[in-house]
Every structure is written in C-alpha cells, then in structure tokens.
Image (cartoon, rainbow, N blue to C red; front, side):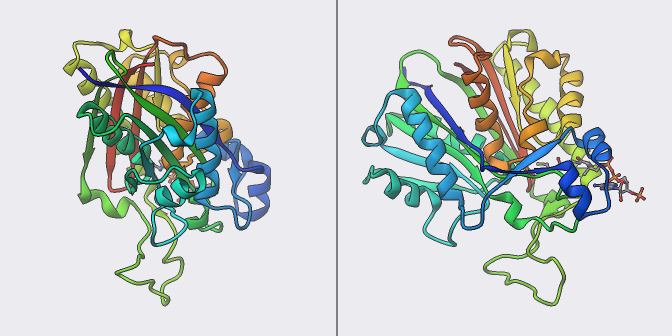
Length: 322
Ligand SMILES: CC(C)(COP(=O)(O)OP(=O)(O)OC[C@H]1O[C@@H](n2cnc3c(N)ncnc32)[C@H](O)[C@@H]1OP(=O)(O)O)[C@@H](O)C(=O)NCCC(=O)NCCS
C-alpha cells in the first residue's frame, strides 16, 4: 500500500517586523489590547517587491535541503496561496522554473488560510494512487498586501510568510487520513469583495482589501476546528490522547486556547507561533510545523494533527505519523 510521508520541512519569514508598538502609531489601538484579544505581538511583512514566489522559493529550498533532495527529485508542486504574484501563471509554475524541475504538474490551490491543508490533501491523494512519488507542497502568502492598514479590526492579525514540506511515497504511514470541507454560505464574513471577473469597484473605499466580521468568524472557527479534529480522530479509532502535537491554523491565540479546551488537549501539546508569526494565511500551518521540527519538539514517529480554517469558509485536517 502506498502512503505519503513528510521527509523534509522548510519555512521563510520576511526580514521586516511590525510590532504592536508600531501599530499604535498607525491606528487607534494599544499593544495591550492586541495582545489580550489576539496573542499577536509582532508580524513579519514582505519587503517592497518581495513576492509570494520569492518566499515560497526560500521555504522550498530549505525543505529540499532538510530532505537531502535536489529539485530534480521533485515530480509535482502543489501550492496554496490567495496572493499570487500574477493573475496567471500560477505561483507553482513560477516556483518550478526557479527550482529548475520541469515537466511534472504544478498548480496553485486557493482555499485562503486552509490552502496548505488543501494542497497537502491533494498531494497525498496523488501519492496514494501512484500518480506521483515526490511532491513539493507549499503554503505561501503575502497577505499584508490585501490588508487595509487603517482598519484596526484586521491589520493587527495578519503577517506574511511561507512554509513547505516534501512528501515522499513510502509503504508505511505517513499521512493516515486527511479530510477537507467548505461552506460557501459564509462568504461575506471574511472576504475581499473584488476580483478579476467582478472587477475592482473603484467607487467603493477599500474594495480590494480584506473585510471581516471578526467575532462571527471567531465562533465558527472554534466550533469547526473542534468538530473536524473529533471527526478525523474517531474515523481512525483514535482520541486526543493519541495526538502528540496539534498544529492548527495560527489565526489567533484565543481561537487556539478555546479549541484546545473544547477538545481537552493540553496547550503544551499545541504548536503556537501566533505571538511572532500572526496569521500568515496558507503559510501558517507549515511554518508552525517547520519551527517545531527544527527546535526538536516534533520527533520522528510522533502523531500530528494539522488543521486549517479560512475564508469561504474552508477547512481541513490531516492526521499523520511524522
Ligand atoms: C478581530 C478580533 C480580534 C476582535 O476581537 P473581539 O473581542 O471580537 O472584538 P469586537 O470585534 O467585538 O470589538 C470589540 C471592540 O473593540 C474595538 N476594536 C476592534 N479592533 C480594535 C483594535 N485593534 N484596538 C482597539 N480596539 C479595537 C471594536 O471597535 C469594538 O469597539 P466597540 O465595542 O466600541 O464597537 C476577534 O474577533 C478575532 O480574532 N476574530 C477572529 C478573526 C480571525 O481569526 N480571522 C481569520 C480566520 S482564518
């Protein structure tokens, strides 16, 4: 039986850091309010001209190095992003060209903050069917480019970054199970009400920026993250006690603690990078994974539960042996 196993992780954060003290100079807020309501202390912001593909390339090269592989060993690229460099071609094909590993399929997946978990699920299915052997899976977003820096309800929460994993075919898990979902009825709770086919409404202020009904998003996020964890665990005859590390989408510390509490999972077993990463959209889960692999918390053989949640709404979970 074919399984897909993570053989290398990598990540990248832009150099520039914007602290809560910096935000105090830009909007009517306080550092204490931001910390208390979100857990975010600082976020990384891409330099002018630095793109999603630039960040994805750094993360991908680090993941390849960790796996001891060359770009030519990769036969497919799946990349989650909502902030591509171009309308087309995809960031995945730009990345393929940068790495110089031509010929295999390369495409982007747009599931907002669930982008990486969607990409991982798709890559897993290609490997399970034998259609691919080694897949580069990336989550990368320059989300701050679609943030209105005068909107204190959103600009406090987001940052930029990229994370990547290499999935390789093996005969032992690897990824035990992964599941995705979406509910388009929630569109207007978290969205950018502008786009290529609908056009940019230049008569409406902030029409190309993220709009969010924060407290409503909060409630659905907590319920969904709890429900999908329970569903994937029970479908595999497992409980929270079997999970060594949970790596949820790093949306907000309060969402993480509320989810952990509802699941009965001690916070000590949840990877939490909210303080320094903020919400990096599709990059958030692979970034947190890479941090915990490199600092030695996550060890080979550990059971991991990855979870995404984002605009749409979209959601997904992956249960795996690292
Ligand atoms: C955005 C969020 C931090 C706001 O916190 P909250 O406790 O829900 O706060 P509310 O939106 O109810 O606003 C409470 C008050 O704080 C104010 N406020 C909002 N942002 C503020 C800021 N940065 N500084 C100070 N006050 C702020 C509001 O204007 C409101 O004031 P009012 O009572 O006078 O109207 C919170 O709702 C949240 O994190 N939601 C989830 C968002 C998320 O994770 N999205 C991505 C999912 S992928």
